[in-house]
Length: 198
Image (cartoon, rainbow, N blue to C red):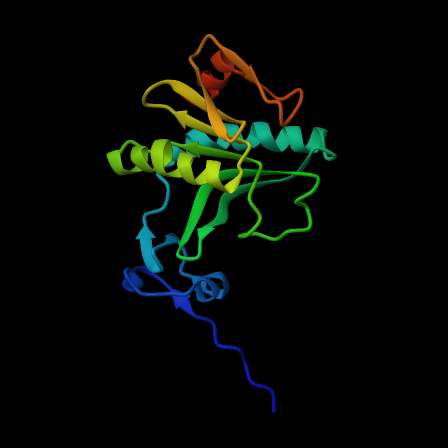
């Protein structure tokens, strides 16, 4: 007689619950919540705000259009990109870009995207997480380009992996930046800023 597999269902009442990496990977999640792990404890976060969505959507659209035009360069563009930082920590990034090539056979969350895009939320904890914690984690994991969109400060910060560290560039509304990972993908800062409702 066949038995049905039982799935672990996680939600807001599970905040602080200890979960293993494999339990988290196989779990089902209640809608309208973002669940992450930190130190093997479940961390329940509210869903993104409409302002956050309005800022990230043009970025996703730009990257999606590039992917459609360059399928040999970009394998996939993933919203709410899940990656494993270490055995006790999982992250959900805003947008991950996976390039075609050497890493294509690997599966998420172990596979690391070559490019990550984060849209900063206004609270101090989010700012600290995006500018400091994630920057260090993404560098260590091998993310080649990390882009932070900050609508409050009206700028885009680009970290490019060079010789084991990140080189930082800040784009204000009058600047543009081309990505070495995606030839022909140009961030036109003024247009980008307008699209991002700066």
